[in-house]
Amino acid sequence: MDLYNETAVNVATLLQEQVGASRIYSFHLDRLELDDDLVASDVNGEMRLTRLTDEILANVTATATVAMTCLRCLELYDQPTKARFQEEFRVAYDVRSGAAVGSSDHDERFSINYANELDSREPLRQELIISLPMRPDCGDRCPGPPVIADDGEDGIDNRFAALGALLNGTNED
Ligand SMILES: [Zn+2]
Image 1 (cartoon, rainbow, N blue to C red):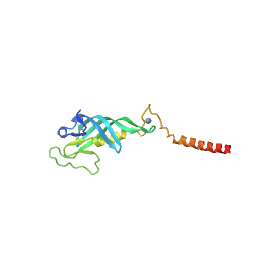
Image 2: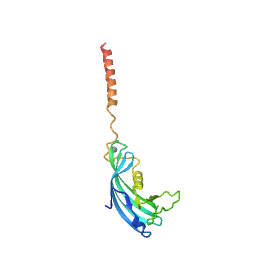
Image 3: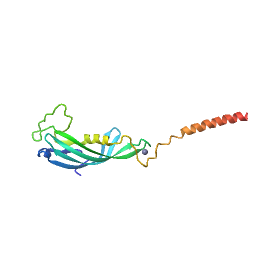
Image 4: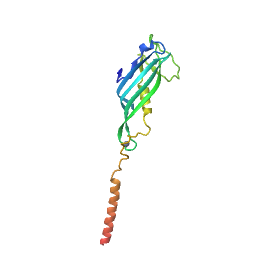
């Protein structure tokens, strides 16, 4: 495992290599917070980083388990999921001089930071969220909708009992 509970890679060496040079890193994260109340656990993956002219292209594949609430039985279950994406990280600082490299205002690429680290955490977070099912379902063993609390039936029974008592009372009179 190249990256353990870590998503940032130092790419200083790769940035000094020629266009087309690449590296492959495997990574593991015990947990990754995806959103409020949404956490991925046991995230495993691999990323290939390729040096391009003014950026590094990251090809990432990852698998993870996310605790979700089943829409049918309303119970939490472990949803396995996987993501596969490509993300561009622009070179924001010259690797040798440290000087900022200009970009247009509309550049929406992620960037490699001043310490020459490329961090795939944010795109990974976004892609894992996208990978989740719109209608979470715990699967074939789903017990189905929870039985509505017995209160409803008891209420009916009580009303019948009360009615019965009333009728009985009337009869006895
Ligand atoms: Zn279920």
